[in-house]
Image (cartoon, rainbow, N blue to C red; front, side, top):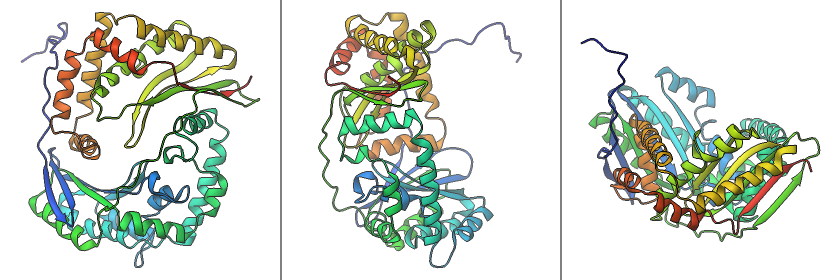
Length: 425
């Protein structure tokens, strides 16, 4: 069959979505393994999710340092020996710490899981936090902090979160040099014992794997000695300081700007409509903020808006960097767009363009077993129903301009907004 490249492919509207089945298997003592089999290549990913995010730390930087040092050695293996042993099988593991949890991830070929899994679990259950490696990480973190503190964007982000959530809120936790310097092995060991060894929330297996591999994972996690979370903790109160907050940097050429407010979580009934509205307002290259402030006015290289849902609190913000002399004009235009989207219905052509873009990018985000597992993790963390993603398509296709106008008036109200500017007066 020959291709006729002068004729474009037929356009098809996305009207439904299939999310693959997954299985929930009991490990022990309330621990569960979520198993999602997908893909064609015999590669699997095992994630262990711990209740070890920023909200659980007693000292600032405790969570991030504990997470980053889980691969730095055990009683019997140095960091180099661990890395070389996994590398021999073409495998590796990584850890990441965020606001709500810590995730340790192993990637490997299914046929090598029996060799790699014991190394992975040894690193997680027998971490010793060597002083030499800790000193190196602290030195590197301080050097990175010194660089960041010269960046307007970093200072703006830091000041924004402190004013959105409050000075003592875990989501507004930023390390200072003294915090890093004061961290000790004992601080990490304490956090590790309580929130890693004693804080496993669940395991998530994805990719193309055998039944034998799944059984092996169940057995070895059970034998590893992890215990599950028994105390979910208490959410910290939010103390927003609305209004404008200006921090002067006399040597700045550009000003970093972040404007936002507390918003709704993924569990809220309006969340998906608000996501769609945010896309139109500032969530992609064809958004209103980009068209006006970058393309028409030429005031910035980039501007965008973000809806950031977290477990205990969420926020929505607009972010940009604008030349000092154009800063006030840029801020004025931001508020004009904010006012316009709350007063006038979105034209049908603009709505359809954004809808098609959103559906297409969403489908790309489900490409591959590990991307599907990322979506499944969101469902687990926020206790969302199994039809959450299939319903997304129907919600998007049925959302009208009037729906979005009502949503904008609910959630884009400039009252109680936080405006942070870092730049030269």
